[in-house]
Image 1 (cartoon, rainbow, N blue to C red):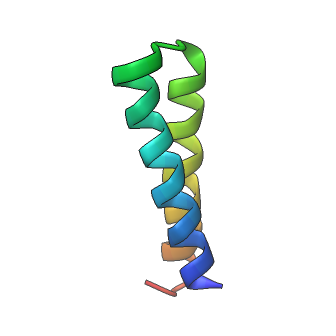
Image 2 (image 1 turned 90 degrees about the vertical axis):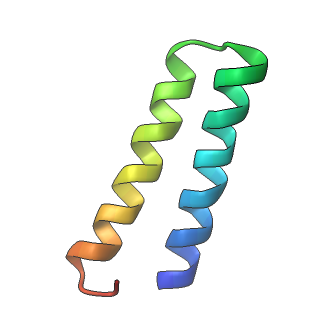
Image 3 (image 1 turned 180 degrees about the horizontal axis):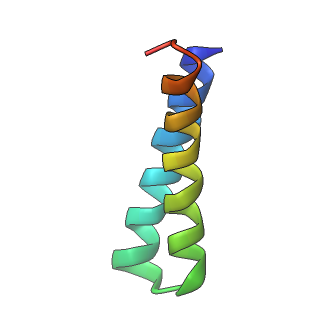
Length: 49
């Protein structure tokens, strides 16, 4: 489960970077970043750092 959360977080961060520098989508960029941070925080809070 820990590995899946980190993979999702990495994919979302990469999507955020692509959106920020390539597509300039706007609010979608920030939503992707927030989802990535939330998935990392859930992993840390559960004690699976």
